[in-house]
Each structure stands twice: as structure tokens, then as C-alpha cells.
Length: 86
Image (tube, rainbow, N blue to C red; front, side):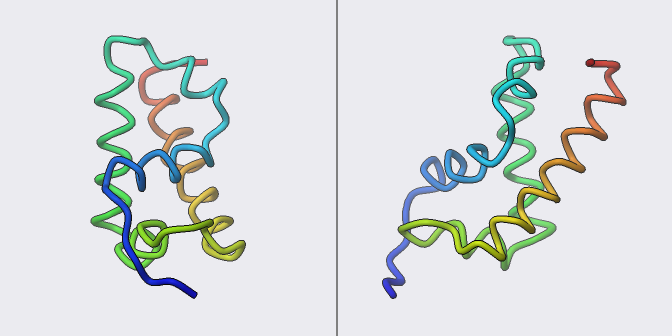
């Protein structure tokens, strides 16, 4: 297994790929980049071990992918409810 790392931008793309696209499209375009980058930053701070796994080149392993998907779902649902986005 390779342990080379990819850029933060590529890591963010891998993590955001776990979020249903229809959720991201519901976020108003003028705050979408801010919302997604803050979510990735929050994951890197609150779950550094999962962020480190995502930062490795290649696919995210199934166990970590499911954990990240659950965390992202929780964050997005919380924010969408807070801002009344349906």
C-alpha cells in the first residue's frame, strides 16, 4: 500500500465526493465554496485521523469511507436545518 500524500484540494474533492450532489446543489452558489471548504476544514480538525486516511493517494478504504459519509451527512443535515435549506 502506498503512503504518498495528495494535495489538500484533491483530498477535499475525494471527501466531498461522498456527499450526495443534490445536497451540494441545494447550497446557494454564492456560499457553496465557503460551505464546502469549511466542512473539510472541520473534518481535518475534528477527525484528523480520517482526514489523514483521505489524504493518502488512492481510494479511501471502505470502513473510513463509511465513517466519513456518516460524519458528512450529520454536518450537512445540521447546516441545512440551521439555514432552512430543504
